[in-house]
Length: 299
Image 1 (cartoon, helix red, strand yellow):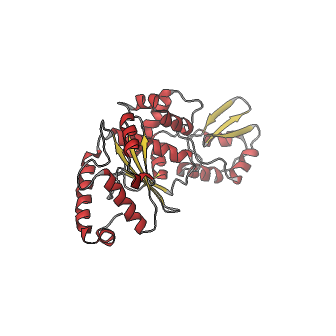
Image 2 (cartoon, one colour):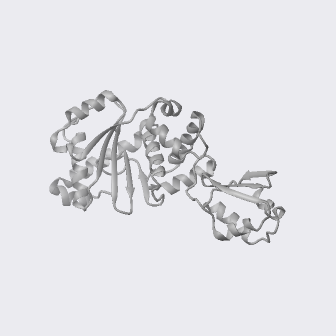
Image 3 (spheres, rainbow, N blue to C red):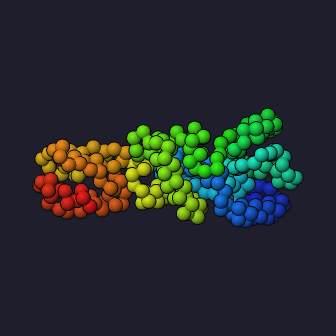
């Protein structure tokens, strides 16, 4: 987080002025955050993208309206000190020098100076929904910022359902993340709504991907792929000793069958707290036959 001391170290006598500017900017951004559909849609995309890249979910943190110059979305990977900053604009017109004193260009420059001073080269992106605005910003970007700022065009829509239909990038990430085979558009919409609900239920301050996934799994455990691809050797041994019982792991869940006469999917995601509790109950029981195991599969 940017502090007054850090601002004074970088900008000297102008430090207090920058601190006041950031205080006002943060206050205004927080007040306007509720209902900012485009920011939430883009954050949804980055959450799904991070999941599909198999980044350690405890290592990646999402924040909105942080106390910094480029503040709409901040994604931090704590291992490796990777910081990504996004300014997100759903507007019909935009200029790099859009206002005197603290233009978008100046905000990006200040953000870079601050983080370079603490040994971090920040990843800086300006995200816009309008293709004409994107083209204009690309063509008008000044040489002195061209090397460290990138402009991103991310299409928006009036609803999540329309967004998934129109925005190929988001649709592809949700498709890869979904636990269901070949999910239809309405299933992707449900997955998107689960993730948006998880994000909106937090204070949006350094929320880990793990926390977001845990919220999503609790809401509906069957839409998000699990991140575990195997079970413990002890549990596997119990299953092998039950005549006629077989299982496979599908999208992070345990899918089982018995002599082609009975089958099901355990409701707990492998690796979750609930699965660990269930597994411990199985370990503490005497399992010799399918009837012994069936009591736990039905729980």
